[in-house]
Image 1 (cartoon, rainbow, N blue to C red):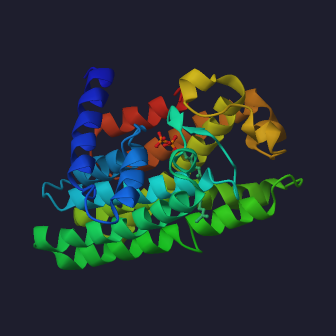
Image 2: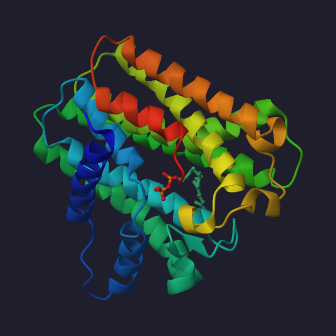
Length: 295
Ligand code: GRG
C-alpha cells in the first residue's frame, strides 16, 4: 500500500462526508451558519472522523451509520478549536492557516458559532437512527461521545489546563490534562467506530486504552511542533506555549525525551490494536505516521 496516496484518498472521502452534513447558509441566522462553515471548511487533518471510520472498518463495519458520527465528531473538535482561540482563552489570530473565527466574525459570533457547532454535532449524530438496524449501538456511541467530551473528558481537561496556565505543574496533573483535553475525544472517536461495528465490551476497552495512548502521543507531538515547526507548516502560531508560560512535555523532559515518549506510546497503541487479532494496515500506519507529522 502507498500510504500517502491512500491517506489523500481517505481524507478526500472524509471531507465529502463532512461537507454533506454542514448547515445551509440561509435564513435570518445565516451569518452564524457561515461562521460555523468557515472553520469547518478551513482544512484540518480530519484525524478524528478518520479514526472513527478506520476503527469501524477494523471491526468489519459496512453501514452508512458511521457517517453522521464522522461529521459530528469533527464539529465537536472544531467547536473546541474555535473556543480555544477566543480572547478569553488562548487569544490566537490564526488556525488552520486562516484568521480565526472570532477575528473574521467578531467575538460574539465566535462564541455563538462554537456552541452552535457543538449542538449541531448532536443534531447530526441523531440522524444515525434512520440509517441503522442497530439503534442500541447508536445510543451507546452517543453516550460515550457525550461523556468523553464533558466534565469527565475534554472539557474537564481544558478547565484544569486553563486554571493552571502559567503555573508550575507536576507530570501527574499534566497527564490528567492531556488524557482529558486531547485523548478523550480520540477515545470517543475510536470507541464509536468499534461500538457501531458491534465490538464487545472487552474489545471496546482495548480500543479505549489504545486511543488514550494515541491521544497522549498526539498531544506531546503537538508540544514538540510548537518549538520545532514553522507558522507556515502548522497554520497556527508557534512558540505559543512559551508565550503562555505553559508547562509541557518539552519543558519537563526536553524535545529528545518527549520524542522518545511519542514513539513508545504509539507503539503501545499499535500493539494493543494488533492484540485484537483483526487487521487494518492503514490504521496502524496512520498511527505510526502521527509520530513524524509536521503539522
Ligand atoms: C467551551 C470556552 C470553551 C472552551 C473549550 C474544549 C476546548 C475549548 C478545547 C479543547 C482543548 C484543545 C483545543 C486541545 C488541543 C487538542 C489538539 C492537539 C488540537 C489540534 O488538533 P489537530 O492537530 O487539528 O487534529 P486540525 O486543525 O488538523 O483538525
